Structure formats: C-alpha cells, structure tokens
Length: 231
Picture 1 (cartoon, rainbow, N blue to C red):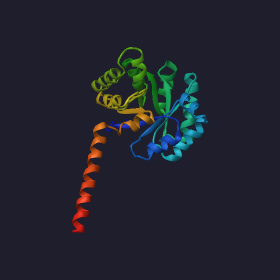
Picture 2 (spheres, helix red, strand yellow):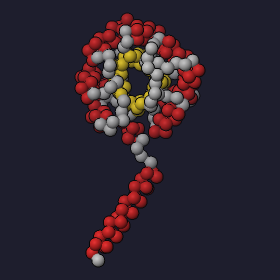
Picture 3 (cartoon, rainbow, N blue to C red):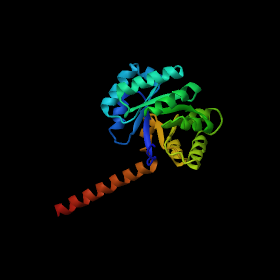
Picture 4 (cartoon, one colour):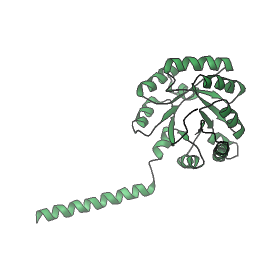
C-alpha cells in the first residue's frame, strides 16, 4: 500500500537544465516532467539531461517512453535500473498499451505517470492499473471547448468518493498562474508548470505596491534617525 498524499507539490515542466537549477535552488520544486518535444527543443540527448537532473538531486523525474506495451515495459525497466527507482518515474500514454505497461511496471514498484488524460474514465483506468500519477491536460482540454480545470475536479471527486489514496492527480498543460491555485483548490495534488509561470506565482501588484511603501517608510525612518544623531 502506497503512502497517502499529504501535501501540495510543484513540478517544473521543462528540459532546460539552467532554468531547472534556478527553480530547484528555491527549495520549492518537488520534481520535473519532461517529454520528447521539450528535450528536442533543448537540443540535448535525453539521458544526458536525466543524468544531470539526477546529479542535481531532483527527487522525481518523469521520463517518457513510447512504442508498444512490451517496448514501454522494457524501456521503463531499463531507465529505472539506470537512474534508480527512487527518482525515476516512467511516463506512459493512456492507451491500452500504456496502461498494460503501467500495470507491469507498478507491480515492480516502478513509479508510473499516465499522461494524456482527458476524462475521468481514463483516470479511473490508470488508477486501477497502478499509476502513481494521472496527468489531466488542462490547457488542451480548454482548447477543445470544455473545462480543463473542471476535469481536475471531476477526477478528484471520483478519487475521494472511492477512497483512492495511492494515485496523485498531476495537473498538466497549465497556462496561467491562476490555473495553479484553482487546480489545487479543485483537488490536484501536483501542478507541473513552465518556469515562467512558476516565476509569475511570486508576483502581485499589491505586493509590489506594499514593497514600494515599505521602502519609502524605511527611508523616512533612516532620515529621522540620522537627524536625531546629528542633534
């Protein structure tokens, strides 16, 4: 039995190791999700990227595999053996082959992230297959004219009512800061986000205004102190 989920987590969705280092240094990043498209943009060998992230100490790295179910199992086993089960999560699509691979790998205590989830029924199948994570694609669902964040809520409702405590909801394809907080409020355990959205989470116009006021007040205090010392 896997441990119950007890805390919110933030993953970065990128293969840019410089941005990952910067984000991980904050102490607020819990993992990384990658995919072939992101790694192609980086122009690097995927396994060189994985090793750099392992060496950096990233606790959870989603590594995508493709092919038939048997091919995904073989590749998942190889990656888990090479990089270690603790930090390696094998990322498979929500297809018959992907879920068959998930079931085999999960029984071998290899973490699996089932991606390309677009309905609660897919999330149910993935959870039954032993997935550690299910990844509903918020932005892509929105692109097809139905609510991506509502999908997160629907999956969370099913999991809660069925006492599913061993599969985490990993909200993916997040396209704005507000979607992060809404996804968590709707029941996501994890949001995987691009670095620019992570940076944007720090910002608020009222925080900026408050800082400006603090700076102005501090200058007045310093001026008053200096004047009193001169008397």
